[in-house]
Image 1 (cartoon, rainbow, N blue to C red):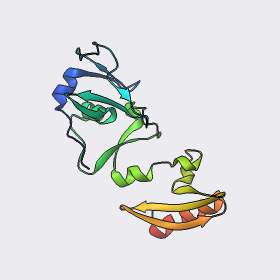
Image 2 (tube, rainbow, N blue to C red):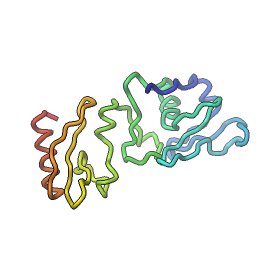
Image 3 (cartoon, one colour):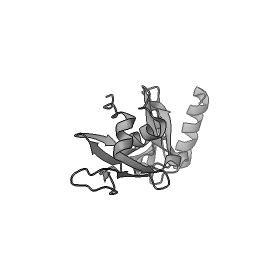
Length: 164
C-alpha cells in the first residue's frame, strides 16, 4: 500500500521544528490541544513516533525526511532506522533504502537479541532454529537446525550461493 503523500515541505516548515540531535519534532504553531514548543508526536505500540497533520496520521521519520530533503520518499523506498529503534528519529539514525533492503535489516523478536548474525533465523520451538531469507519479495526456506551456529552457517551458505 502506497503511503499518503506528505504535505508540502513549506507547510511542514511552517508547522514543525526538528531537532536533529534529539530526533524530536515540536510545534511552531498552536495546534489544539498542543501549544507552541510542545512535542508534536505520540508513540504507537510498535514504538514509532507519529503525528497528525490536517486530520491525517504520518510517521515522524517520514516528516523528518521531508523536512531534511525537501521532498517525499521516492517510489519503492522507505526510511530505515539503522539501530532498529523505531522511536530514534535522529537524522544520523535514518537512511533511505529499498523495501527489500529494509526487510533484510529487520530483526525478529524470536531471535532473543538484535544480533545481526541471526538475521533470517526464527525459533522453530524445542530449541531448534528455522532459516528463511526474503529475496525480491519471495521467501526462501533454508531448513531447520538444532543449534544457532548451524542455522547461521546455513544462512551464510545460502547467501554465498546467491552472491549476496
